[in-house]
Length: 413
Ligand SMILES: [Zn+2]
Image (cartoon, rainbow, N blue to C red; front, side):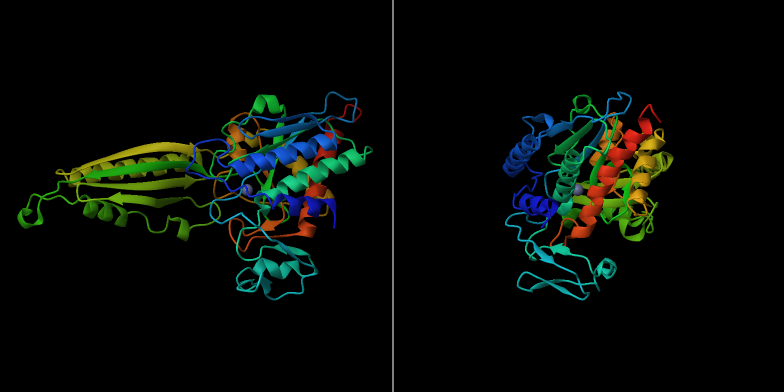
């Protein structure tokens, strides 16, 4: 077993599930225990400036092995928590070596990983596949990223002939509950740009994500005893249902893909007197998101006019923005990652993220931060898996990104 896989299998023994109902950072104690273990490992590796702050953010530096000061500091980032959607406690991985195709029994076989359900498996014949035992998630999201980053750093230390500049690494808490970037100290991290190693299958390279907002629409009705309600009662729930029925049917998450945006009714809270609809709005285009907000505002205004006895209000809140605007002005960030993949025999698969990432938030905090693959699949559930080969390729790409950055910016070029 390689150091890489040993690391990964050790990391998944920590239960680091984040908890959205707690406001502390990190939101669970397991994350801090994991951070402390990682800190120890980074110290033993000989990294400098190893720092674990009280919020559970762990950072360290691998100093440059070049005399050239012109080489920029780059960063690699991964998150320590696992998703609240499935348990991350008592993770018992199995490794299926040299996968021959067909179903893989998970644990005692109550659950299977099937290529019928997950056709990606067809492309992984001959690979060594790490799965769960069918009772928990695996935690490849994002402990594979952590194992890959640390293994790449160890490789650079063991191979001083590979040129690299200063490399900052950062492991963050609570990404899965949307808070991973909240207390990240960008300035102290000291990188000019970074990569989150938090993507899926080999080749994934992402620097576009949704622009996101939410809209809270509130209908205030009039509650009257049903026996004497004629011409008096205004049922807020009926209004809310009518409103939603008029929303564009083909602009929902279940009817869109790729670069298409949507309106999504994510939550509702209703009584006769008051009904609240909570929509999330997503669009890759900034103007597109503005248009979606305007559409809802207009619709609320005309609804209020049509039902003068009711009160209808809307509150729109911005959530996050497409990192493309922050990354595109620095094309070398994507070029270097693309080149690194190609040098490792991997065709970059650039696609938009239909969500947000910590990298997007960090990009707006001054640290442009696209996302690179880990080699994993089916995150956040019991069918999560990753391949040994994919993980090794991620390590190769991280090493190559460090090397290409040094070569590109060396003055002797
Ligand atoms: Zn992740």
